[in-house]
Every structure is written in C-alpha cells, then in structure tokens.
Amino acid sequence: MTKSGGRPRGPLVLLTNDDGFFSDGINALARSIGQIADCFIVAPDREKSATSLALTLHHPLRAQKIRPRVYAVDGTPADCIYVAIQKLLPGRPDLIISGINHGPNLGQQDISYSGTVAGAVQGTFLEIPSLAVSLLPDEKGRFPFESASRLIAALAEKLVPNKIPKGITLNINIPADPPKGIRITSLGWKRYNPEIIEKKDPRKNIYYWIGNGKPLVVGGRGSDIEAVQAGYVSITPLHSDLTDFKALKNSLFQEAVSLPLKKILA
Image (cartoon, rainbow, N blue to C red):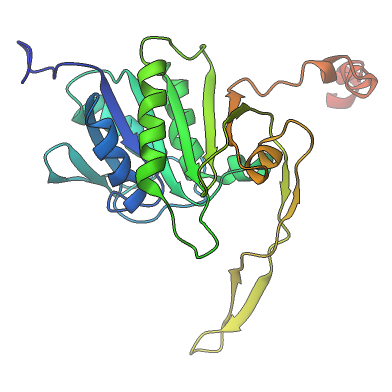
C-alpha cells in the first residue's frame, strides 16, 4: 500500500553491503527489516570488500532491477548510497543499514578498509541515521544470519524514532554464539601485515597478489574486540570528524605554524 504520491507507508529503510546484492547476510536482513518497515536493497552487483569510501568517477554506473525493491549497482557501497537516494528510492530513507557482513569489522584498520562500514558512513555524511553490521562465523565457519537479522530489526525499531546523534555511525559486530548482552565500545587495534605473493603470468611478467596475512589483534579494556571475544554484541559509535583536538596544541604543530613562509617561498 502507498500514500498519494507513491511513498510507501511506514519507515523507509535502505540496505546495502560490500558482499553483493545476492549475499545471504543482506537477504536475511531484508526479511527481518521488511516486517517492520518498507525495505529496499541497493547493493553492489559483485563483491566489493575493502573498497572503503571509494566512489566511481571515471566510468558510468548502471543499476539493474533484480526484483521489486532490489537493485544491483556496478559500483562500490558508497556509489550505491548515492544512486539509491538520488534515483531509485521513493523518498529519503529513515535509516540506512550496511550489512550483514560475512565476517567481523573490528578495530581501527578494519573500519578504515571496510566497504560495509563505508556504506554506513556515506549515509552519515548525508545526515541519514546509519549503521554497519558485521557477523562473526562459528567454529565451523557458519553464519547465523537469521538470528542476527532479528537482533538488528529490534535495534532498528529503537533507532528510527530515537535518532542517532548527528555525525555518528554505529559499527555493530555480533558474535556467532548467542550473545550474552550488548556493550557500547571503543575501537581496538587490528594491525595487518599482509603477505605479498609474487608470481609470473604466462608471458613471464611478474605480478603481485596481496594475501590475507595474520592480523595482530589487540583488544583493550572496553574495546570492540574485547567485547566480541567475551561473547557480547559490540556497538561502537564512530564520529565523522576525524580531527584529533588534543594534537592541535602539540608543540610540533605549533613549530610548523611558525615556519617563515615568506623566506621559504621567496
């Protein structure tokens, strides 16, 4: 059912991800969110992991309607948000959810690389309440998407009438086992030292392939890593303003201010 003018009834929720419109995570989420809101999927047409906030600027984007309220875009998660809001949705979304990602997005490096997190951050840039959702696998590599999606639907019901503060993106990580509770956390450290695999193509030209490597995971007290390892859902508020205000008074930067520019540039 629709209102006059074609806007669906109820809250409008946009789903995206970096795993592709066909992924189990986003479709499980759509089933749960669809019970409480008008839900659209606008997601990449293929996996776009680790694309961060990249935008496609040098070739055209195409959006294919897969079925009602589901679109595949041949771009990044950030592209999907722009295209969805400007061209595909019947109105401005009340909430954007990026996920459910197949695997965690924990710590400072993960959130910097992640296309999942970037999809939500793009929504925050546009002043739309946004959250990124990631799910850890169990010991056998399975993902309990259905239970995780029900949890997110319950959270979404709280967030739509009670807006997320301006400039804040919520990064949510869910353990595979039934969680013990929910914790509000800070970012831990997850430092990668990826292996670089060197091989030769059939014409004997060298090429390089970035391997996964084993990350050094450091989860301090109150961090997202500590919470998930202890069996809790982690909710980390990320601020779009990356300024380090304490560093503004650092003596090193004060020395930079005093550089004799006229002399240097003469």
